[in-house]
Image 1 (cartoon, helix red, strand yellow):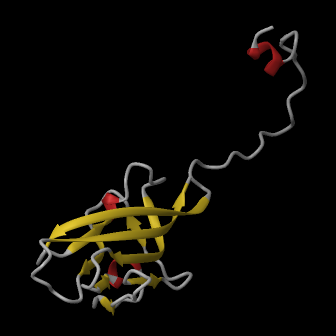
Image 2: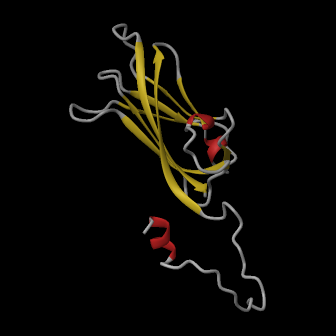
Length: 161
């Protein structure tokens, strides 16, 4: 017996019956919102700022728009710290255009990192196909020993599926 016959029953005959009085509601495609986390790694030349753009989250992003829940940034170069900025006018409805900049220097046992959490209900729709810059990263300390700087961005979004 084939797998298809097992899945559909031993004898797959079509049956008929009375239709319901009215059609049932059918949900619109992409009416369900889920929280997903995406990760982007960046290596840039020293003196160049690493920018996370909305369209760089990869082909796995569901939907055409997303609402940012949080963005976490880590600096991967030991001893150089991290200076990260969130473009709040891009991801929040605060109406403020100044970026929020935070510096962290890590410790002997942890990478320098910072999390930007968007208040619930104040996220702004972000076009996930656009080149809009969501966040940026630089080393907090410039050192002549490094020719490249590496960063990891993790973005947690509400996306429609």
